[in-house]
Amino acid sequence: MHPHQSQSPDETQHPTPHVGVVLIGYNDAAHIAHAVRSALAQGPVVREVVAVDDCSTDGSHELLTGLAATEPRLRVIRRETNSGGCGSPRNTGIEAVTSPYVMFLDSDDELPAGAVNALLTAAEEEHADVAAGLCVRRELPSGREVPWQAALYERSAVLTRPERLPALVHDTLCVNKLYRTDFLRGHGIRFPEGRFPYEDFVFTARLLAAGPRMALVPDRVYLWHVRRSADRLSISLDRAHVDNWRARIEASRQAYEILLGAGRKELARAARTKFLDHELRMYARELHLRDAEYRRAWWTHTRKYLAEYDAADWTVNPSAPGRLLARVILASPEPRDLSRLKGLAARPARLSPPYARDQHSTPVWADDLPQVTLEPCQTRPAHLLPLCVDAALRPRARASVLRLRLHEMYGRVAAAGPRELEVEWRHRETDRPARRTTVPLTPSSGGSWSAETPVDLAGLGAGTWDLRLRLRFADGTSRQMTGHAVAGAGLLRRSVVPSLRFGILLAQPYATHSGALAVRVATGLRGAATVLRGRLRRLLP
Image 1 (cartoon, rainbow, N blue to C red):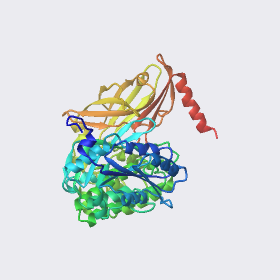
Image 2: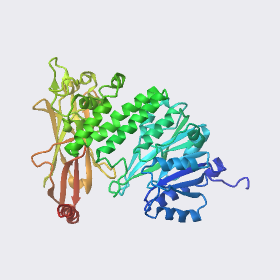
Image 3: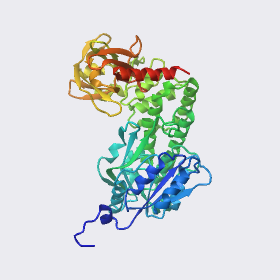
Image 4: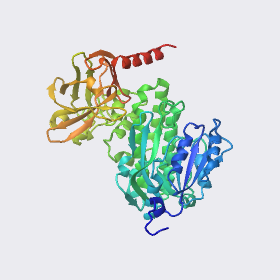
């Protein structure tokens, strides 16, 4: 090569291929070719793509074989029987790769350009056993992107041991990481075999238990495609059956035991905290949507697992919403207060009335549950409390009105001096904000504060809009909040609103799974007709 001839970044940094990508799939012919191409497009840094077909019956294997006929870096392995999960085919891939580094890819996802190079560069420069980067959840078909555990990947970092960053237990994904193949094989790090939902939890725990040297990079290294309307939902989205919850608990239990057994006590404690703050809150938000049989089974199984926690597990941040949620579940043998629990499980959390005190005037969850105290509410700064703002939207022909009511909480809100609410609507799919408004809070009856502001529905335009609030106090502190959707008196029903801009609007305020206020807007006759046709399809057999 001429001394002044330029080289590509891959050729300059990695003169020989280093990485094997293990791609797994089952009956996903619609997407698997795109995933393969995203891996091959990483360039010569990828030595091989090992596609493990888990005994598909939809033509996936034939499609892969056809691709391999023209691409020498693609190798196809077909399992003789379907494993029923993701762990077994990934283990097959770990044994099959010949490259010094390996990473994983699911058949319905993709690797963004430069992902492998970014991870490999960090792994080699830092002599790391594992390199990890940012995964982005992409909602389809809208294309809206939400970073996964973004705080872990804000900047480059090197960890000589994972205990330096206990929050690593929150990133249970295996796909946004590059692993030294010999490290996985030498420590016997594998996925659970067969049908084992949430196999990533166990694999990640085994990885951290082995104490790898880790390099973190801020680069986007994985695109996780979320298809909520798919005929076959992914495991993480298919939460309508209580068996899914049981599987999640079992995976969480095994992760804790693996870390504790390896002497990683700090990581084990962090894993239990993660269960309360993430898993428990996510499923509790949806509990009111389930039938009575599901609720009873969920409640019983959850209480049994929480009873395994020891005293030290409850001492860390005792006022955190997940811990309060868990204490209510443990204290009551039957499901109760689902609406309040839904709000407490929301992000950000809110604690709706009624508020109670025991005979010693100590704040408690309820009169009939005095053992669940809320003493931390007495000392925690007001802007960190799970405050509640009721929100009611009334679509009207002349000016739609949003009414807001902030509740007192054991005298803490009045002492902090609530001054105003910043109001913002955000488009659900694009995260585009509408114009912000700030409204003053005025004292009202019942020890609360109220505000109201007009809402320009035509200015919002078509789509689903989420209400976002910021409460500001006299001392300059503030708290981000959602508005608790108020039901009753026809507040959550579809309205037809005349509009100079569109002719007519259809507006429907509604409560999200967590009870927050949102509004769906359809514009013009065409938009209204689309909504009405959809409603008729749902009503007619």
